Image (tube, rainbow over all chains, first blue to last red; front, side, top):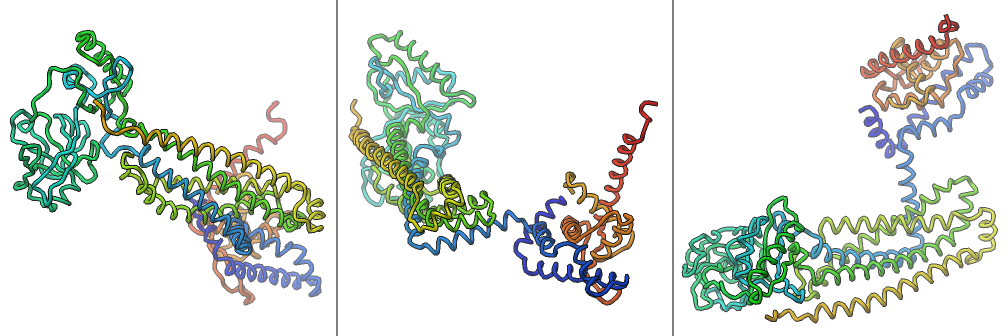
Length: 526
Length: 114
């Protein structure tokens, strides 16, 4: 408690310097006078009284300095002073500052923009309750390929497995829909009973499917997406009169799904599977995507083992009449993003290299800058400036540069993310969850801190490692740069070339693999 | 408090608190003189030790200060013990007595071998 109070007061002391200083001066002054008076009373001559008092009390300035150190927080004061000094130095070299900030902004902006896509698509958890329990399931055929499920296999697996909270099949296809404000051709998902239980999502309003909707010959009902409801159904909350015609049936709209829920495949309608006749015979008609939710506490490897056992048993039982030799399951997030995963990580790798090149450029500029300041540094060192203080100074300057670069970069990234999302192929899943959110901003912040530390330390050690005498002599000759600078400069240029080469090769590879990803025909071949 | 390593500062703080308890509100000069006199002039208190110590005590809330006028009409800053300071003084005095007592036992000649 006490030390906290003292800390707060000292923090305050940083900002109220002059008043405190004046106060202290008059206090010390009055102390001195009292001492002199006492000496006078003791019978000394005025000069002697003053001399004795001054000897006795010690240096006024040293005392002031000691009190100052106790009063404020010296570290914080030094930090602020260094920041101010750094800002002045940067303002003095406006051209250099501009180029360095711009380069850093470019690097940080590009990296942040790509990271926001990587985060939104690959890393951000799916917006469903306990998303790690949801998985997609495939049959694996004799060639080892993953294929869609057949209905009888799905039913057998669902009824046999012990690890499932629910298992659902679904199949999305375009429906021609009339009855809204205008006819549309829209993707509708035919989903089996447990679909919404698996996803953990229920309608925003209206109702979900009841058991009586989910049997053959029941009155057709459907659920609509929030966006379709807004755009074509006028956002009306009275659902009782809403009827939509499709697929030679008239469907009653019973509910509206929450905003953003379009699973699977950006569907706008969900129709119960059970209103259509079942297919209980063919174990080779691979028509269904299968999604499941595991019981809490069950992890994917356990579930996989069980599915494999069941698949093996079915294979034994049906022999030639079944394609399935095994079953494969992936977490839904992995399943959704599988194709783009490696491409996106590659892209992130590529911008990281771009950032490295940017850093190398700025480092080179900073070193050139430091070389010009060699004389100043040597003089400061000769006057007794601690090496750590000089290092600190460079760190502050780098921090200022990276801070400015970071702020501009993040703004650029905001614009860049929109552009990226616009450019991205529609097939890229989860594009709607790409944005500059808190984790992305934290990423940008840590990037800035990392860069500032790296650049600052590099320049600082380079610039303060020399021999003061030599530096003074060399600086005295007003040379553009000594041998040491030239060597380090050459090293950096070589490094830059190397990185650029890697970047070019990487970009080539990336282009190729992107082409490959995009050339995968999205149409299912049965 | 905390600064246990810095024995001199620690003892000086205790002396300041004790002085203020004995004499009431007092200025820096008065405190310094009193400490010197009490120590039989074995201790010399100069600015450099006194004022940082006073500031520290004030920041910790054990003493408070305000400007006033001295006996011979001179402006001076007066320091005064706060309630927290009184408690701290009791506590530290107790601890200090204990320490000296223990040390005295160690240093007392011959008792162990007897």
